[in-house]
Length: 168
Image (cartoon, rainbow, N blue to C red; front, side, top):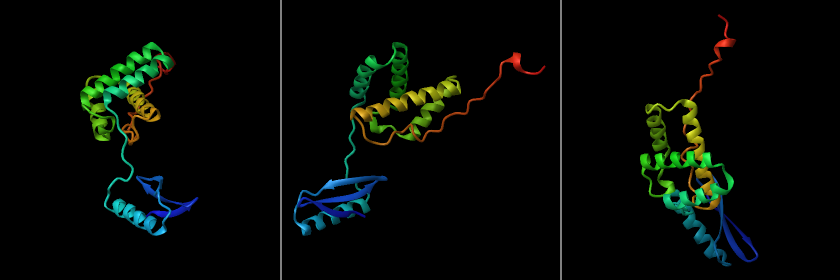
């Protein structure tokens, strides 16, 4: 459902897409034209057509931009680790653009890494670092789709106390 309102002789439509409120200028001062455009928006939403286009960037471009930012803001060891994490994700999932990665692919990536011998804490750190990289890509304007790492379940970490503190 889209609502219509006017400001300074220009009409705007307000609607929700994927749970996010969108306000869009209809670029008209005619109420009848604005009502027609609002009706078109409602039909598109009902048919599942995206009103707001997804902004997406090539994986290589956004990765380079992130690394140039990271060189000024992170330690060299963190940058080296993130390069490895990113390369393994790209080799595993093979996305062309940032938005091509899905939660299912991230879950399979996590399972594959666990089969390779990665411990649960390390796996969680890899997922957190990759999620932060995509969040930063969104902040830089390279990506505005959903972050596929958000819904991926983290692994439980068992706490083993040192032997010297346990009762014998």
